[in-house]
Image 1 (cartoon, rainbow, N blue to C red):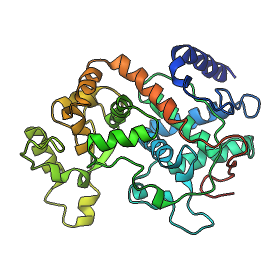
Image 2 (spheres, rainbow, N blue to C red; image 1 turned 120 degrees about the vertical axis):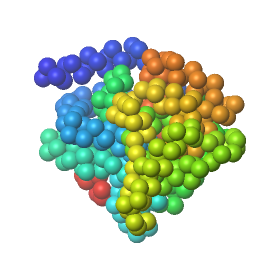
Image 3 (tube, helix red, strand yellow; image 1 turned 45 degrees about the vertical axis):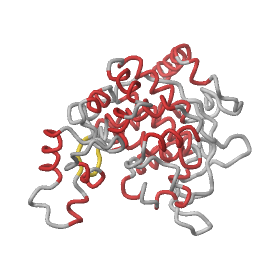
Image 4 (cartoon, rainbow, N blue to C red; image 1 turned 30 degrees about the vertical axis):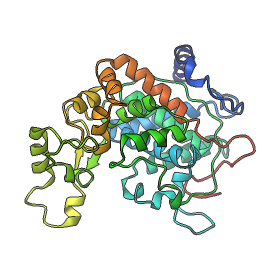
Length: 335
């Protein structure tokens, strides 16, 4: 019980520190402590299980944050990304090439849901579990603990066709990225701030291999710093990789120095020309975003709070509440 009290105290302190995060929301069905009279242990269960998974494999944190982002940006934070199938028989979101085999954390969400169902049957939505899990991943990766409003409900629909055009892709220009974020009610600063999530996690070489031999000054695809490009060519194109399938499996850390810690090293790397993805590196060269990148690189405390505030706003995107949606018994199915 003491651990639960500690969590509640941290949430209370966070509410004092993060007033702006909730100022633009008007959904009265959502609130911090939503399950306090329904399933008081839920946030502790999520925290405990994510922590155990993290200490076995710190890479799970990047997976949980990405999973939450990919869910919220497509149809809203409704756990539609978790569905294996729907009654319509259409391909679901996780079947999209933008998701597919690259999604991580799915089994952990299943395990958390199963544990919560044993204690609080048909009470806690998969959408809220994802939000709580992302918060824990952020905290374990070094950023401040922050409150999460709950009360989301789960969708019964999921369509792979909805993914196209609703998620950032590595070749997107800053202009197109900005338009995408603004369509979700987020700002150009949110774009730069949330891109800092790429300070943790891995990326497949096939996503940036084409950039390793660039020599042009194309502002939409700025060249990579030469020594870093040389290192990556050796890492991604090793002689022992004989087949395309073998080459497609090769991954590198976004940040080899602090691979499992969310920090502003991401922005410092961009300023050095060491961004892996075209869309990341363009943030440091485009006039609309370069100033923000430079500011974030030297403002770790400011960035950390901006990041958690942006994640809170992300978690409010097009949520289902009240009589909308439902509470799934199994996050992979519609019932």
